[in-house]
Amino acid sequence: MNMKTGSFQLEASITELHMYRFDRVLFDTPHPDEGKRIWEDITGLQWPNRGWWTEAESLDTDIFDIRPNEQTAIHFRESSISQHVKTVVWTERPKKLKTRVTSIIKQNDVDVDDHLVLEPELLPYIRMNLASSDITRVVFYDDSDIHKHMVDALASEYQNVDFVIFVV
Image 1 (cartoon, rainbow, N blue to C red):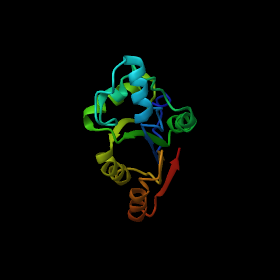
Image 2: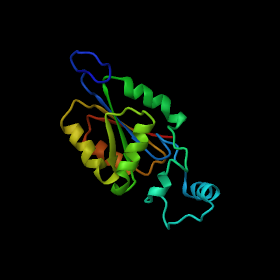
Image 3: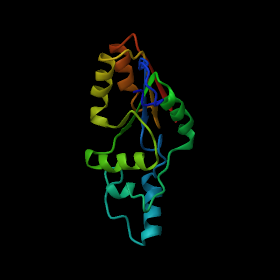
């Protein structure tokens, strides 16, 4: 059954892989300074941790209103309805937060083909998909071009695949 259309027809060939970064791209998550201020305003307590991105409290939906980023939502909806596109969410958050991130994705009814790929698994995940499919285009939605070196390396390795980074 084709899960994107709900019909019983032959599956369309997946030719594109669209990778959406969770933080600040697909979801409007707070940055550390803003988040710590919100945390203190709502709880009346100082931020209890040294770090931000590695802490479960930074994803506390009782404190933070974490919703899809409207700037990216249009692109995401286009990706997710296309039968030729596999949509994926990836994050640099640590493995211990995978369940919490996945929960936020599901709470917001964001329908993706693979809910979450962690940063250390990103390159092997992309290579696995390129080796076992008809993918000719990989599109990254990111909030910086920090991953450009990885994309450039992939482009050298897979010269028949078009790699694109959209900085949101």
